[in-house]
Length: 290
Image (cartoon, rainbow, N blue to C red; front, side):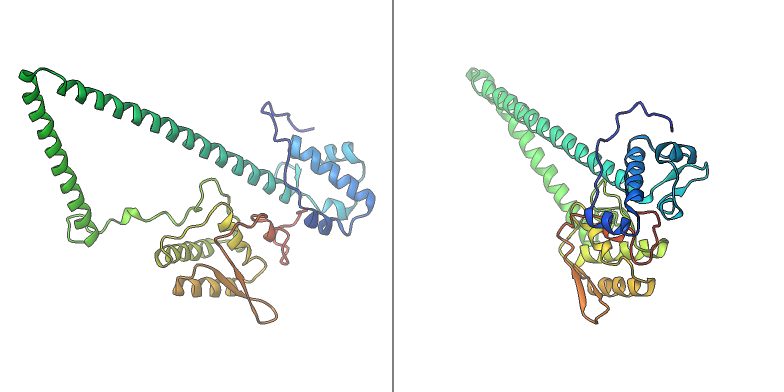
């Protein structure tokens, strides 16, 4: 068996009944039992050698063996299983990160309140001094207050000047998001067509969408849901759909179905299946899936 990891393994992974049923429909009942057994062991222990598989379930038919791929070291793995494991790990990490940020902000709010309270107390102590101490301190407070107002006015003027393009720095381009990255930190995107052209068009649409749709961005898993709409389609059709969306600054994608109608994906909603619609798609681009 493969090396045991000291780190505690995730006790679960997502298994979609429809995908599982369709993926095993041509297997015998004996082959289905062997298939599930191998998947469960792989989830906990990782990739398996050919000897591991024989020791685990005995003989394997070519039809069952086709559900797995071998890496360069000769160890077998299931493509869909490893994608589900990676997707779940990314989701858990993103939730932990969000919780950490939230707790940090929560502590920051309490600290700001404490600082404000101390400042108010110091000012109260100043004005409670004797008459011979009031005026000098009051003048200092008034001077600092006016200096702060002047600094704020200068800062606002700089911002307006930069935004109008008349300042020395021109327009502030660094305010734009990085559209080459997922809109939600931690999301793992699976593109329906490989290569830099697909990624470049996708980034251009996100930018056009952001500019023309009042800074609209995707929520958790929403970006992958939009990508799923393009699954199983050829590159010319994908390119045409994205170029039209870019030209129009569309918020949603519209793809023509086989019957001539248009399928519409509301990208602001989250597809609970995430990227699953493209795995084991009609083009069989990801062999070895459920």
